[in-house]
Image 1: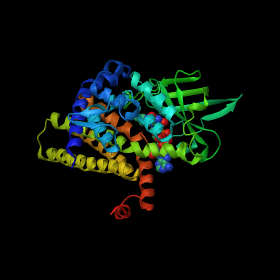
Image 2 (image 1 turned 60 degrees about the vertical axis):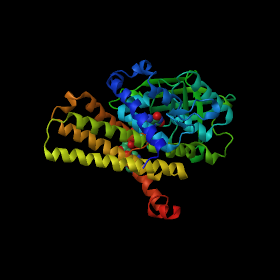
Image 3 (image 1 turned 30 degrees about the vertical axis):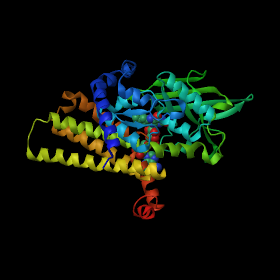
Image 4 (image 1 turned 45 degrees about the vertical axis):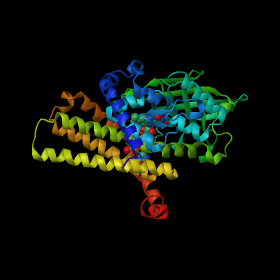
Length: 387
Ligand SMILES: Cc1cc2nc3c(=O)[nH]c(=O)nc-3n(C[C@H](O)[C@H](O)[C@H](O)COP(=O)(O)OP(=O)(O)OC[C@H]3O[C@@H](n4cnc5c(N)ncnc54)[C@H](O)[C@@H]3O)c2cc1C
């Protein structure tokens, strides 16, 4: 059961999502059209979502309710509502996004100030550059190097599949200063810096996110752009990256859930046959969506309560499986040419495949979940400890 406050937030996010639906196919055809949609209220919400109030961001307000510091559960509710309209538009919006959560983990006051002030001045895109060609799931094997050359730190390497890489004004980039798990550091890069270049990748799904390939050719990194330099090496780099994933994983689950809801709604509106068996399948999908929403919300609440992201792995895996099941069932029930005659459904099928890879595939989520079970951080042992 949601509180009145969260119910109001959900209603508002769904309304904003309905606007996204009207532009979903245009953005899918041409991701550069995002510039025409910056005034949509949902885009404006995303452009400042997560900026701490101390930097002067106006709090998100819905009726008489104010949401100053956004919790994981509130973020999930917003993302679900927006993605129900269009997940592509949700990901295309400017804003602090993953980089903001990383700055909250690692940034000192000066770095946070620089980053957030700019985001508040004008719509500013950011990107979070971790994945490298041939090093996706195994993020710890990253090889982008941050080296001292002639008394300056230089960043060199390649990143791939990075959302908003071409649009971004700021990139948070993970690089290696030495071998081993403690040799990874994150830096804040101005994408206008010499040696930074990004190219869009042609993708089938989530085209609004405009994934990109980044080349870093001896980009100078000033000392004040090294994130976490005031923290111990164990608290920087990969550890911080895992914290960001823990915080945001329920949100990725919410995006997949939004796709499932969207396809379910579309199917309910467009089905032609009224066969009892089909009606029953659609109804069962609705129950699965409700159950998955419950899991996603519980996972977000667990992140808020303890910071633990293991239940969120279950939620992400479940929501991605459901997004595929609902979109493919919709194709089956709408007839053999469904993907040709229903372009929006075709897009939802492609988007459901895309979200599977974001922030770790299902296999990786299962590994994380089972590690959590073995460690007693999720499941009956964890619940007993909370009681
Ligand atoms: C829409 C989208 C947005 C993205 N946004 C970003 C972003 O903003 N920033 C960023 O840095 N990256 C981003 N990525 C990249 C994403 O994080 C990677 O695609 C993901 O980590 C998987 O890596 P990979 O594609 O190299 O696949 P691989 O790691 O090569 O995996 C291929 C297959 O092998 C399986 N596999 C791999 N390792 C194991 C294992 N240990 N056990 C069992 N199975 C395994 C996987 O499950 C998968 O099925 C994005 C990707 C997508 C699709």
